[in-house]
Image 1 (cartoon, rainbow, N blue to C red):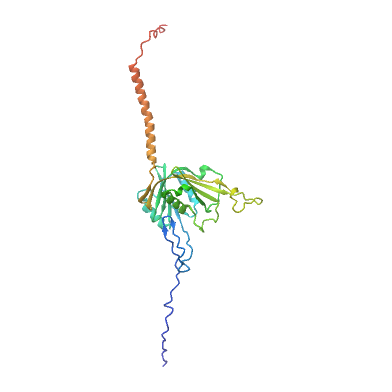
Image 2 (image 1 turned 90 degrees about the vertical axis):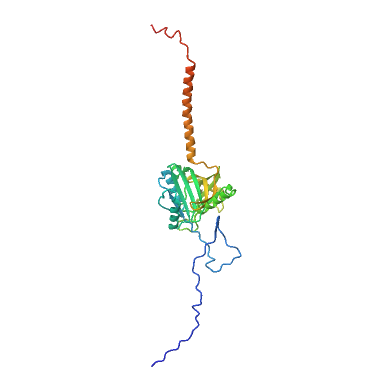
Length: 319
């Protein structure tokens, strides 16, 4: 009968060995004005931690029901300018729209939202939201001009990355600094995005005039011929040609959460369109009241100052 082999107690080294960390690099801590850079003296714990952070910003663009065709064309123009944007179906403009949009953002894996809300088929409001923690800014959109209306000569490659320029007064007050950071995160195309082209051939210009944010889109035109070529850094030969669209944003409120929350800022100079229309109606009604009062005064004047009968009035009636 065969003898059984004795099992030697081999040192268990494989069990104690640690597995390499194959997890994704950690996202840097996010602050109110962007991502916080790591300290210069901090050394990475592993090769995965030393990998650079990749911006995966995605913007959801949607609108409310019963939106007019001009505002819908404006939304389509902005959607064509942002290659990292996603479009979704219309959302009912109710009090509970914030919860529905937050769930929609989570389902579509988006971190930002541009929601166009149309009321009374006259007024357009724009919600600029960072989800899920906020903040969110509500604007009134004025002076809307779409690309089809303007028919400008400028043109640029669809999907190319834009250059963002801001006027100097964005850095004067805290609420404008917050609006600038939100615009930068939403309108700036992430680097190495799969739908983006690695070119910079147009500029998004944001400027503050009279407390309003004005938007313009310009093409960077360079005279590039086989004979006359522009040297690197030759900005004196470059020109800007407007492409469109155009619109103006009037800030109403800044909220601390997504589609709501505590109010951080409220524009003291904002007047709602309903108040403006009511004032115009009162002015028109005032004109009619003045006409009626003038007629009454004229009749009273005629009754108080009656004319004397003319002695020659019946002179020529006999003939």
